[in-house]
Length: 259
Image (tube, rainbow, N blue to C red):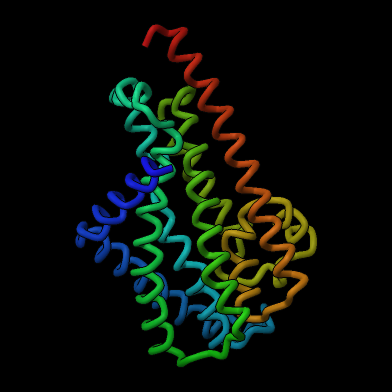
């Protein structure tokens, strides 16, 4: 574990020193929040799409965007390592390649989460004012946020591992992001979706990464919290197993191809 903790620490340090990337992500987050704040302040009030008032809705969107923007582009790291042949040099190292990429992604995500969390809070508080969140709601914000980032990294790793077969994983990454928007409840709580769409979203990992987590933070319920954390842990385990399976299959293809 010490090796992976060292990779995590180095990744945190490198990400923190990369001020340009942090500033760029922060500006992107603020621009998104400004657009959504002005858009949904009008639509939510006139359309009656949700029971949340405009103030709650912006906090909901801010909690979603915070995690969404903080998920690192891990799939590009794996795709680049595969395309350039760097993967062949990393495999013999005395540590798992998947563990290395995961630890590196977690280091990035930890710094992004901290910096973008502060930016999200300052902007949303300045735009619509503070909102009352229970003590357990705050626990949900941070713990589920960490688990959602871990799950997001694993899913990105799965997409990256498809490079063994597809070579270009951008189409899959695009589908993933759009599915996250549509089934994750990015702009509206899932309760505002048609019943059939809610059922579909419930059986995907997207709802627990974004909408389900944010709605629970604003309106805490112990039963729903248990379900949310159970689903997050289940998807993390399933995602880890899938990533490991794809990696082993991919290595066989590399060996068979002589590369």
